Image 1: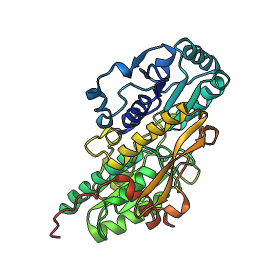
Image 2: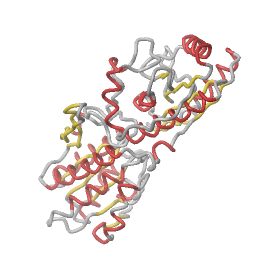
Image 3: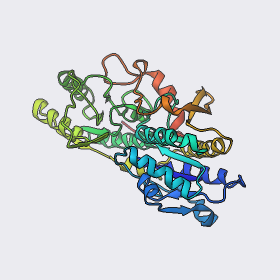
Image 4: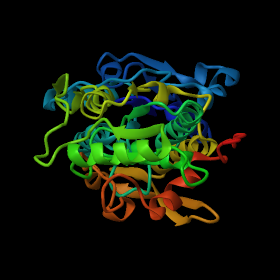
Length: 381
């Protein structure tokens, strides 16, 4: 069995790796459990580690290790590289391939499946993305931890702004073209008036005039205002409100949206404003890892390894929501063609009409994924 990681890492990508390894150990037909060091580059360079030679104490650290312990990659692949990978699989007698990643990685997984299907090589995808934008599945491992990090951070920023209510704090959330992470900041609220006071998502065209109206109204009411804005905000023309710094293929390095919005507040409203951009701090945080996210990531890895050994191929592990209260999900298998490069965005019923907040339906959906209840704070104002 060969396991590879693709794309940006998460706080639980190694938990899925752990689940796959532990399940693979149960199958006597698997002589070696390889990890590709450096993603697809590791496959092409035949740079593998055999997890059967790694002591259990070290493996047990995987679910609590941030980023990708075996590395990952993000570069374009063409037909010749897929054919090269097939030859590598044959050379090393690899019969099972698990690919753990997001949209782009599931496209890679699907293409590997197509070249390998006639050679008795089983290929299964494991979903991974903080952006939560993979199609069909209810949610993706990685998102719950990123959501917990942002909600906790916004709650703490909210306390700071409330204690000295003289400025507007604008927190920028990752998420690319989907607003799932930005929306999750709503879980910071314990009562009316708590931060975040405004949430802006890329699914709704950003209107500068309405934004300034919203900020000014709340500043007059509250003094301090906390705004959460997605990095992928676009205007009515579908253009990024801040031009990307750099773009190559699907990888976009967004301009500084929070700094841009803070400058608008300063220049056009004459109000002090600050910008905060947690960035990869949110996807690397083990301290704020969601235990629900961690456990589901392990289950996804186990399900993928078991499915491959049972003969399944050309599928991705997904999650089907059974209930919110009590929270319950089950693993399902989704044809890989249904998730290759398909981007799942926030549905309309999760966003309020003005486009500056989320709905109760989103809160009910999201809350179970971040795990334990966020802390409560002492407030005397």
